[in-house]
Length: 263
Image (cartoon, rainbow, N blue to C red; front, side):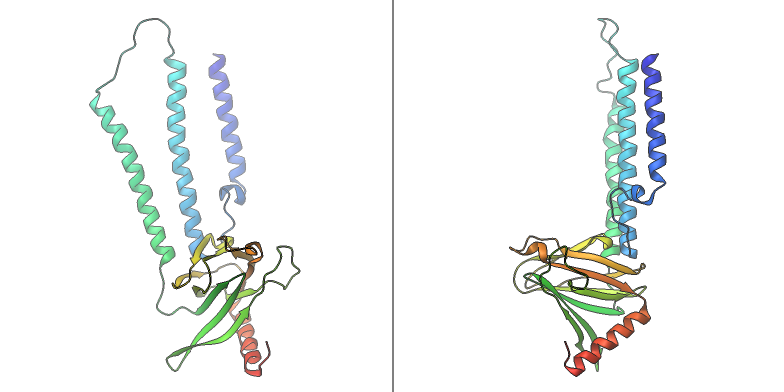
C-alpha cells in the first residue's frame, strides 16, 4: 500500500511540475532559442514532436517496468507462466518500433525539404564569405540581366565582449525571402545564427545556400561554428532584422556610400 501511495504521489508531483513548466515559453521550447523565422518555427515543432514521442515511449516503458515490479514480484519458488514464442506479442514489439521510426522519418524528411527549399526570385540575396577570422556580406541585385554587388559589409575579428558596433552586421528585412549564399577561400567555416535554429557549413570551392523568412525584428548574435584557427572565437557577427522600409533606407545609404567612395 505504501509503495502504491508513493508512486501515485510521485506521479502527481511530476505531472504538476510538467504542467507548471509547460506554461513558460522557454520550457516548452525544450532548450531551443526563440525562433525568428518560418523555417525555425518548423524545426522547433519537429523538435517538440520528437520529445513528445520520446516522452510517450518512455512513459509506456517505465509504466510496464513499474507494473512488473509491483504486481509480478517473486512470491514463491514456482516458475511463473512463460510467454516465449508468443507470436502476437513478438509481432507487436517488432512492428511498433518500425511504425515509430516510419512516422519520425516522414516528419523529418518533410520538414527538411521545407527548410532546404529555395525559390526562383528571393527578395534579397546576400553572398556571405567566411574568412579567417571574420565575415563579408555582399548584397546582390540584378541590373540588365547581370548580377552585381550593390553594398558590402566587411568585418574584422572581435572579442565576444566587444563594444556595440564592433561586430559586422548583416541587415535583412522582415517578412521577405532572404537567400544566403555561403563562400570560403581559406578553410571550412560554419554560418550559425542560433535564433534561426540552423547552421550551414561554409566550404572552399563549394557554394552552400539556404533561404529564410524572418518574422521578428531585432538584433541576433551569429558566429562561426566550425573550429577554424587561432581566432575562431573572435569570428562573430550580428543579424539585424528590420522593417522593409528601414532596410530600403539602409541599402540606399550603403549604395550612396559606395558611389561616393566612402567605406
